[in-house]
View (cartoon, rainbow, N blue to C red):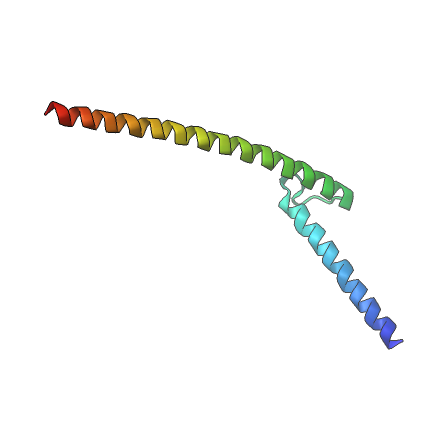
Length: 89
């Protein structure tokens, strides 16, 4: 009986951990914050949100790469202008 009670306590702890993890996941997804949602809905919306954030991250990374290229070109132009100015003096 004691072994059974221990097993039940462990199982309850495991279920509570899963429940808390789903609540945490739900609260991490903007469209679900404060909403009541089933576990399936939480997983679906979390998947959608992760895919959206990956696309957004990819776009931002492309923007960063473009800006780095532009910055390198501008730095090159500055160096050329400084060199031209120095040789003109």
